[in-house]
Image 1 (cartoon, rainbow, N blue to C red):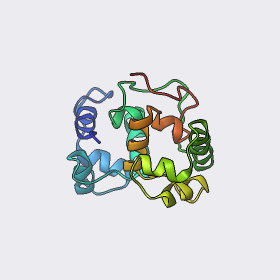
Image 2 (image 1 turned 45 degrees about the vertical axis):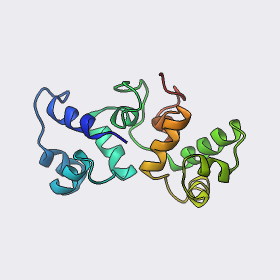
Image 3 (image 1 turned 30 degrees about the horizontal axis):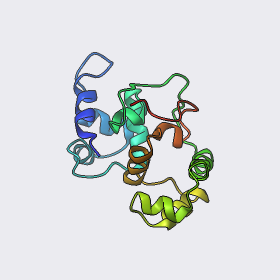
Length: 156
Protein backbone atom coordinates (compact mmCIF):
# COMPACT_ATOMS: atom_id res chain seq x y z
CA UNK A 1 0.00 0.00 0.00
CA UNK A 2 1.13 3.51 -0.60
CA UNK A 3 -1.13 6.04 1.06
CA UNK A 4 1.31 8.14 3.04
CA UNK A 5 1.93 10.60 0.19
CA UNK A 6 -1.80 11.00 -0.39
CA UNK A 7 -2.51 11.63 3.29
CA UNK A 8 0.22 14.24 3.54
CA UNK A 9 -0.91 15.89 0.29
CA UNK A 10 -4.53 16.02 1.50
CA UNK A 11 -3.50 17.52 4.82
CA UNK A 12 -1.13 20.10 3.37
CA UNK A 13 -3.23 21.11 0.38
CA UNK A 14 -6.73 20.49 1.67
CA UNK A 15 -9.84 21.67 -0.12
CA UNK A 16 -10.47 24.15 2.71
CA UNK A 17 -7.63 26.27 1.38
CA UNK A 18 -5.26 25.96 4.33
CA UNK A 19 -2.81 23.47 5.72
CA UNK A 20 -4.50 21.29 8.32
CA UNK A 21 -2.57 19.98 11.30
CA UNK A 22 -2.41 16.32 12.20
CA UNK A 23 -4.03 17.29 15.50
CA UNK A 24 -7.07 18.77 13.74
CA UNK A 25 -7.60 15.59 11.75
CA UNK A 26 -7.03 13.39 14.78
CA UNK A 27 -9.54 15.39 16.81
CA UNK A 28 -12.11 15.23 14.02
CA UNK A 29 -11.94 11.43 13.77
CA UNK A 30 -11.49 10.75 17.48
CA UNK A 31 -7.92 9.45 17.71
CA UNK A 32 -4.62 10.68 19.14
CA UNK A 33 -2.36 12.82 17.00
CA UNK A 34 0.39 10.23 17.37
CA UNK A 35 -1.94 7.58 15.95
CA UNK A 36 -2.74 9.76 12.94
CA UNK A 37 0.98 10.43 12.50
CA UNK A 38 1.57 6.68 12.40
CA UNK A 39 -0.98 6.45 9.60
CA UNK A 40 0.50 9.37 7.67
CA UNK A 41 4.01 7.98 7.98
CA UNK A 42 2.60 4.57 7.03
CA UNK A 43 4.14 3.00 10.12
CA UNK A 44 0.72 1.61 10.98
CA UNK A 45 -2.09 0.34 8.76
CA UNK A 46 -5.23 2.46 8.84
CA UNK A 47 -8.17 0.39 10.12
CA UNK A 48 -11.05 0.37 7.65
CA UNK A 49 -13.29 2.42 9.98
CA UNK A 50 -10.65 5.15 10.30
CA UNK A 51 -9.95 5.05 6.58
CA UNK A 52 -13.63 5.82 5.95
CA UNK A 53 -13.53 8.66 8.49
CA UNK A 54 -10.44 10.16 6.85
CA UNK A 55 -12.06 9.91 3.41
CA UNK A 56 -15.11 11.71 4.78
CA UNK A 57 -13.01 14.35 6.51
CA UNK A 58 -11.28 15.26 3.24
CA UNK A 59 -14.32 14.47 1.08
CA UNK A 60 -12.33 12.09 -1.12
CA UNK A 61 -12.71 8.50 -2.22
CA UNK A 62 -11.06 5.62 -0.42
CA UNK A 63 -9.69 4.61 -3.83
CA UNK A 64 -7.90 7.97 -3.96
CA UNK A 65 -6.41 7.65 -0.47
CA UNK A 66 -5.19 4.10 -1.18
CA UNK A 67 -3.64 5.38 -4.43
CA UNK A 68 -5.70 2.92 -6.47
CA UNK A 69 -6.64 5.68 -8.92
CA UNK A 70 -6.71 9.45 -9.24
CA UNK A 71 -10.47 9.80 -8.84
CA UNK A 72 -10.66 12.44 -6.12
CA UNK A 73 -14.30 11.63 -5.41
CA UNK A 74 -17.26 9.95 -7.03
CA UNK A 75 -20.65 11.43 -7.76
CA UNK A 76 -23.39 10.14 -5.48
CA UNK A 77 -20.99 8.70 -2.95
CA UNK A 78 -22.17 7.78 0.52
CA UNK A 79 -20.27 8.70 3.63
CA UNK A 80 -20.96 5.43 5.40
CA UNK A 81 -19.78 1.96 4.54
CA UNK A 82 -22.47 -0.70 4.38
CA UNK A 83 -21.48 -4.10 5.81
CA UNK A 84 -24.46 -5.95 4.35
CA UNK A 85 -23.99 -4.51 0.87
CA UNK A 86 -20.23 -4.98 1.09
CA UNK A 87 -20.68 -8.65 1.98
CA UNK A 88 -23.04 -9.16 -0.94
CA UNK A 89 -20.73 -7.38 -3.35
CA UNK A 90 -17.69 -9.42 -2.36
CA UNK A 91 -19.64 -12.64 -2.81
CA UNK A 92 -21.04 -11.50 -6.18
CA UNK A 93 -17.56 -10.47 -7.32
CA UNK A 94 -16.14 -13.82 -6.28
CA UNK A 95 -18.87 -15.73 -8.11
CA UNK A 96 -18.55 -13.57 -11.26
CA UNK A 97 -14.91 -14.57 -11.35
CA UNK A 98 -15.76 -18.21 -10.64
CA UNK A 99 -13.64 -18.28 -7.51
CA UNK A 100 -14.24 -20.23 -4.34
CA UNK A 101 -13.62 -18.48 -1.05
CA UNK A 102 -10.40 -20.45 -0.73
CA UNK A 103 -9.24 -19.56 -4.25
CA UNK A 104 -9.93 -15.87 -3.71
CA UNK A 105 -8.15 -15.94 -0.36
CA UNK A 106 -5.15 -17.74 -1.85
CA UNK A 107 -4.97 -15.26 -4.73
CA UNK A 108 -4.42 -12.37 -2.30
CA UNK A 109 -2.49 -14.47 0.26
CA UNK A 110 -4.92 -14.41 3.16
CA UNK A 111 -6.81 -16.98 5.17
CA UNK A 112 -10.12 -18.08 3.68
CA UNK A 113 -11.71 -17.40 7.08
CA UNK A 114 -11.28 -13.67 6.41
CA UNK A 115 -13.40 -14.02 3.26
CA UNK A 116 -15.93 -16.17 5.12
CA UNK A 117 -16.24 -13.63 7.96
CA UNK A 118 -16.80 -10.82 5.52
CA UNK A 119 -19.29 -12.67 3.36
CA UNK A 120 -21.27 -13.69 6.45
CA UNK A 121 -21.44 -10.04 7.57
CA UNK A 122 -19.32 -10.53 10.70
CA UNK A 123 -16.98 -7.67 9.87
CA UNK A 124 -15.50 -5.59 7.11
CA UNK A 125 -12.51 -6.97 5.32
CA UNK A 126 -9.29 -5.48 6.70
CA UNK A 127 -7.54 -2.64 4.92
CA UNK A 128 -4.50 -4.61 3.67
CA UNK A 129 -6.72 -7.36 2.31
CA UNK A 130 -9.10 -4.86 0.71
CA UNK A 131 -6.13 -3.16 -0.92
CA UNK A 132 -4.70 -6.45 -2.21
CA UNK A 133 -8.09 -7.45 -3.62
CA UNK A 134 -8.64 -4.09 -5.33
CA UNK A 135 -5.12 -3.97 -6.72
CA UNK A 136 -5.16 -7.52 -8.08
CA UNK A 137 -8.66 -7.42 -9.58
CA UNK A 138 -8.87 -3.70 -10.45
CA UNK A 139 -12.07 -3.28 -8.44
CA UNK A 140 -13.01 -0.15 -6.50
CA UNK A 141 -12.66 -0.20 -2.71
CA UNK A 142 -15.46 2.37 -2.50
CA UNK A 143 -17.70 0.03 -4.51
CA UNK A 144 -16.82 -3.03 -2.42
CA UNK A 145 -17.48 -1.11 0.81
CA UNK A 146 -20.88 0.12 -0.38
CA UNK A 147 -19.88 3.79 -0.59
CA UNK A 148 -20.66 3.98 -4.32
CA UNK A 149 -22.72 1.99 -6.79
CA UNK A 150 -20.54 2.76 -9.77
CA UNK A 151 -17.98 2.53 -11.12
CA UNK A 152 -17.37 -1.02 -10.05
CA UNK A 153 -13.98 -1.27 -11.71
CA UNK A 154 -11.13 1.21 -11.56
CA UNK A 155 -9.89 3.18 -14.54
CA UNK A 156 -6.36 2.25 -15.40
